[in-house]
Amino acid sequence: MIGQDDPLVRFREVQKTYDGETLVVKDLNLDIAPGEFLTLLGPPAPARPPA
Image 1: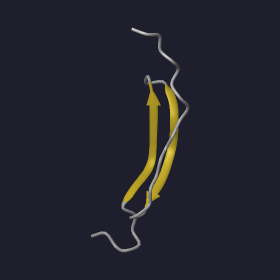
Image 2: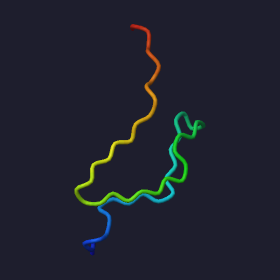
Image 3: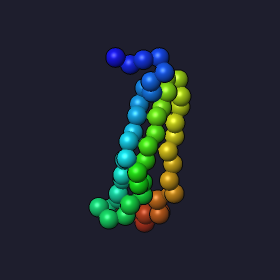
Image 4: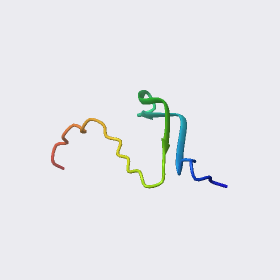
């Protein structure tokens, strides 16, 4: 059961890669409490030529 002081969301040792090789997040440990708002942003993607 979730206690009053427990996080609503918990990430432990999370890693993320793009294209299977480029490591963009390493060993992320994060607790998000009820009522908190979180945004995780990275650099913008390169522009694509028109189709």
